[in-house]
Image 1 (tube, rainbow, N blue to C red):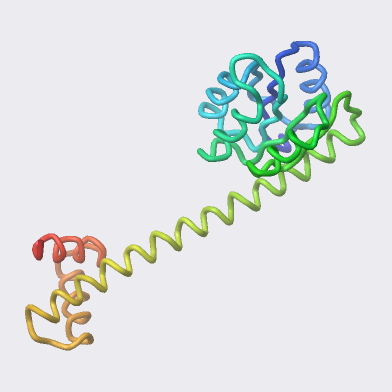
Image 2 (cartoon, rainbow, N blue to C red; image 1 turned 180 degrees about the vertical axis):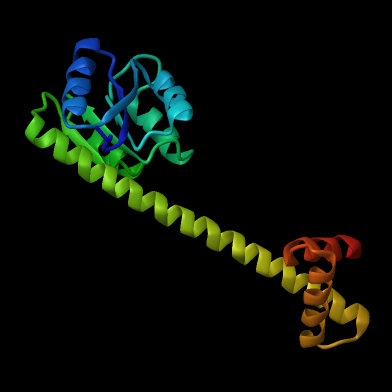
Length: 192
C-alpha cells in the first residue's frame, strides 16, 4: 500500500505514542520515527525530513513549542501539529506564532485526528512549494544583481553602453562555456 505521507510522532508517554502510531498506520500513513522529548524530535526530523511532525507540548528536556520552533525555522518537516492536553491561550498563541499547521487537544478521537493530519500535510506541502519558489526567486534576484554589477564594471572599463556590455558578457559566457553568473563573479572579482 502506498503511504499517504511520512510522519514523526513525539510524546513523552509511550502508550499515547503507540495509540497515535496505530491510528496513523491504519489510515495509511508511514510513521518513520518516534521520540519522547524535543531534542530527540529535532534529531529525528533532521534524519527523516517528515511531511508532518506531531508534537506533544509538555515534555522533558525540551518542550514541544521550542522543538517545533527549531523544526519550523530549519525546515526539518513539512509542518508541525501540536497534540496536547493543554488548551490554554498561551500555548495556542505560541503554537500559532511558530506557524503550526494544527493544534489538537488530547484525548483525541480518530474522527478529528486523521482529517487534521491530512489537512496539515496538504498545507505543509503547499508551504514547502511556496518556500522553494521564494528561494529560487531570491537566488535569481541575487544573480541578476551580480550580472548588473559586472555589466556596469565592463561599461566603465571599456567605455561601452549597457547593450554592448551585456552582449560582450553573453559572448564570453558562450565561448568559455560558463554561466553568466560565473562570468559575472569573475568580472566583479577582478574589479576588487
